[in-house]
Image (tube, rainbow, N blue to C red; front, top):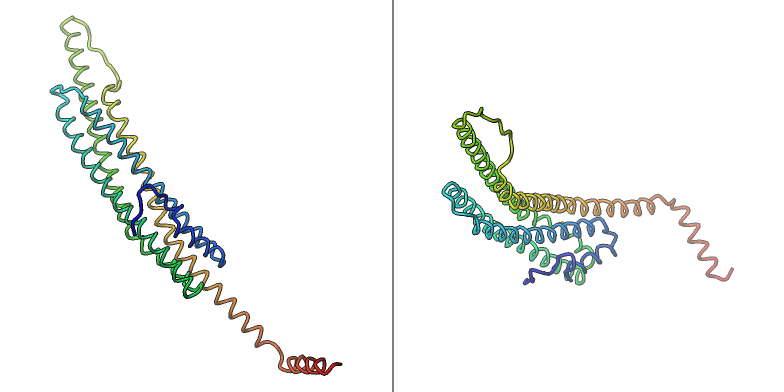
Length: 268
């Protein structure tokens, strides 16, 4: 059940074989749902890698941040937030790896069963619904990480506001000593905090993308179960229709057909 982390799920051998079998057996909708679910998982993995890269950039930026007395508290707080987010993302990647491994394993089992027992085994693709719980867990973790990032952005903005107001107060103090009226400086932002805030905003955007993919993948697992149920319903209706058509034939008509076959069999 091992799977290298860089193998895209949508290109995995067992899954591709399962999708081919589904399409050949008139289960195109189910095949599409599985493929789209796998595609969302692949995108989630790539975005998580991007988040981890962004976190490395932020850690380097914080390391270079000047150790001014006013900034020490913010720096330490952001360091803790970044370290926590990094650990959370690594944990989510492990959970996503488990999802990929389970999808691969289930696909292999269903393909083997279909080859041994026939196409009826393909109905087992509804079992992919079991992956929903793990995906929901990842979705919840991502939401919590987004909340943590929002808190960090809030702290940065609060620090910037405080520094701006302090700077304006000092400037007006000097104007007072110079017998000049106080000046209204407006809402000019503190440039350093805007610079620090950018990577956190980038991480939030990436995490939001991961959340959207997780929710879409969950929706596809639900759709897959509905696809299989609809396929089974349609199949049952087709079989019932065939039986009804046979039963609807008049016995007298069958006798005439049988007699005709008998006559032609004697050479007439």
